[in-house]
Image (cartoon, rainbow, N blue to C red; front, side, top):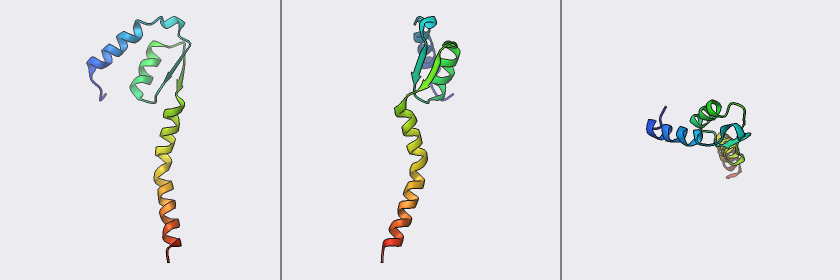
Amino acid sequence: MSFKTESWSKLKDYFRSLPIYHIQMVVMDMWQPYKILAQQLFQNSIIIVDQFHYARQNFWALEPRQRSKLDEKVAVSLP
């Protein structure tokens, strides 16, 4: 993994300090290490990707195609 082991350890320690059995849902961004940690520590919780990161990821995926289509339209409309 590309993040520092020390940071990972601190994050794990922080989450372990929470009352894990009372946590019903975990809302997070789409970073894979967060998902792995949430699955390990909050096994009985629902994991939800927050709306902002979901929308941003979709925008990034679609943006190159949208630019390509726009470039085609501009090229056709120019004399």
